[in-house]
Length: 122
Length: 112
Image (cartoon, rainbow over all chains, first blue to last red; front, side, top):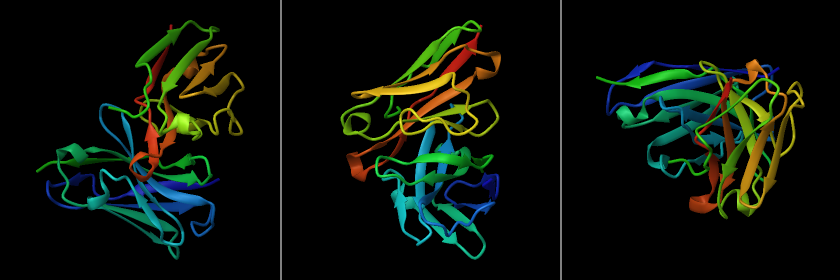
């Protein structure tokens, strides 16, 4: 059973960088066929896909966030990370890491972390 | 404003059948991308319910079923149970702006 767990600060000041790490257990992050993803959910409940990384290091980001996002992977630690720069109050959300099964017709998220609330406030 | 449109809420009595629609466009569902569904109980992470339009992961009861036609998809819950009260989200991919995963706005299911 694959398990994912997010970690990082729950409070970030405006204009600073949000940094989160996702630790994966129960399976190797270096196994092909999966994208390691970040998704966020706003307080009003809408879900937004942020981006993903493949074990090779290839990344794909939501175009609306691309200029502020960096996703990286550390296969030796079985972890992947998210950095979101220049945050504002609009970035306040629950952030989830998840595993996406890669398919040719649009992948799906089969395992999710429990989520971590990040509040942007001074 | 979500790329995929869902009704905000649906309700039904125990044992009834309810359906949730997910309406997209020619750049996502209509382009042939799969539709997936997630169930989210408040305070918990979304859980995969249906993948690849119609497939249920192991452990998901067969009272949940998915379908797709044209630019829309639907999730049906037959024999509604109290434990089905949750938020439901559809997800697909969109080929506009280089393509990425998109979600519906979510539908709250209430068991009367």
